[in-house]
Length: 216
Length: 216
DNA sequence: TTTTCTCTCCGGGTTTTACTGTATGCCGTG
DNA sequence: CACGGCATACAGTAAAACCCGGAGAGAAAA
Image 1 (cartoon, each protein chain N blue to C red):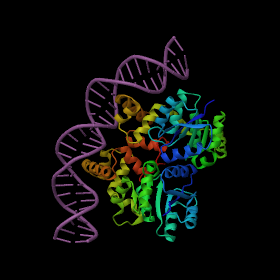
Image 2 (tube, chains in turn blue, red, orange, purple):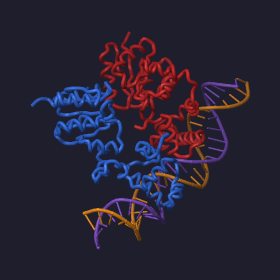
Image 3 (spheres, each protein chain N blue to C red):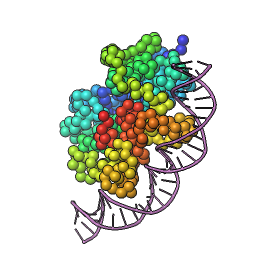
């Protein structure tokens, strides 16, 4: 059997070079092509028939998720690994619904990329523990897709995290929501446990990332 | 004369690899070190005395702009090239005021990185036409309240607020900056007094709004 | 030179968080 | 109906954050 043929799609040349350089340390793998956006990835995918597609999400012309859907529509056996800088639950869910077999943060790529490609080579899936955790908590229950984010946190918890992220103390939150201080505390505790976060700053960044509070 | 010694700082290993791979195509250049955040860049800079620093802006622990300021404070002859994904006028202005000799978008890096490093090697500056245009527009315009805000905080305070916004406890901050816990506390207190903010969440939002921490 | 600013450090105090539990009623699904 | 998830509420503890002071060294500005 021949080498495992991999197609890389990323709009940044330095990123493609970095990925290529990392993958080339592994024998038996071949970078059969590079695409600078999703459209090119789809076209090259049809022409080159790679075994594995390595797609960035944020690309011009056609993003990686829509590219994945198009690739899979033509070739359902394509193995797709999504590589991106974003890691909100919303993104994770979209990645999964697009049909990707793996998902990797760019910040983790240095450590996990080889393992991820190996997993896909052996027709397994690859998700970092953090993403796997999100999947367990969010995706396994029936998803109504559009309001997906709401399903991880309860409505009450979303109210609370917004107030936390806006700088309110627990006492102020309790007062604003007509709760006892103890109840507000419980919601905070549950939020931190659910999201595996352990400080107000982390909760605030989560709220920003997920559009629960407005930055501007 | 020896090789031109270059230090690379980027929190993503794939990015560092890509940059390294690109620079290694040029003879007479040597990557003397890699840093995964600004603090490491400052430390390695002191130890290795590179000719050129290649700094990403969005990095944990210490961002590239504050790292540039610290490096230049110790070694005013350091040549610094900023490499980033953001290209707002505000960012350009901060890059210039930090004392960088060059500024490059990551999306342009594949095309322009070698030329940029060459420019700095010859003790010239490098700015892409797009950035040069922004400089012209940005400098003609009197500074808005942004820059004023910038000067409200001391460099030390910016370091502290970044770490606070990244979810570090006061103890962890003290340890990271080699301070007593009391000193770290004082900086926190002063930050809150200066900015008229009164919670970690408010500090975090301030840091996000002012680009001291990266959201993604 | 005097003044101001920055960074450093400390004592002593109160308030708030973070975390671990327990518990009760409500409500919708299977 | 039983079960699970949700919202509610409480007890208690250790840690952290917050806030009030003060103070010295060194650098920069007036």
